[in-house]
Image 1 (cartoon, rainbow, N blue to C red):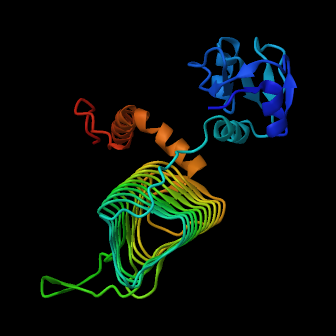
Image 2: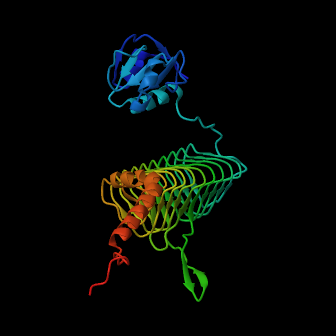
Image 3: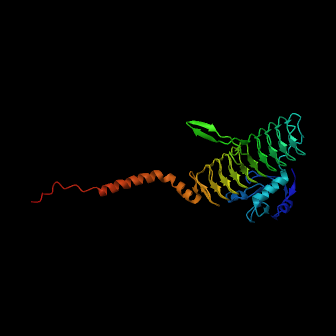
Length: 353
């Protein structure tokens, strides 16, 4: 952990200081939990009131304010500046350099790059190619002819099936499976017959995949996870699906096979997406939505089935009033029936002569 003055941090992130630039910063925390020596940030207006009560030594903000009781670091993008400072003060996880464990099982036909750290009980199969500077934790299985790019990190118990191709700086978190057979069956006379899955999986540079994810290989072509995309825990990607660059797929999302997502899409937690549809670029899908149709570029959708977010919010806001509305409609129907009912003849009126 490093120690920096607020002025040094401001220079590092191309920001400026409002207040004492000599205050010492040792760590980072949230506005509510921060104490002396901590720096925090304000990126969401919902937490603006905490700026008045925070015990942080400094706060990163997007614009100057006179109401803050602590020094401020003014930055164009407060959350990005916070990330930069976190990396500077704390750095990323450090990985112990162990070289290649004698208890790893590595095929004579595999090629291992320089400066790799391969732990005990790793299996690397025939024809595999491991790039430079890779870290492979215990009990990882790497199948035949797998390609793994430089500076990638594979955490414990990951399985990478044969023929998968992973780029540089890829991170696969524990217990995930890459390249399993797609969920493809031909049903005939009540029996489900397995279809050989002869495609592969391509994971491009700078992708991170969370824990317990399943990325299926394609039936004929490849399943592709685009450059810079990040997948949360328990995400399932179906066979032949293509995820574009720089997408964020939050935990517990399921994407069925042969679906295409564009670039910079955000998919909230527990979303389900059917197969064989196209989702455009810069699309946002709210949590727990069910997507059954194509979505155009730039759309924000929610609900099941997913619809335009503005329309969906109006619709869902009415749900709480539905019981009262139902009762009111029944009452109106009864009144209409009474009005429309034919008048009964007056039995006391004398008959015409």
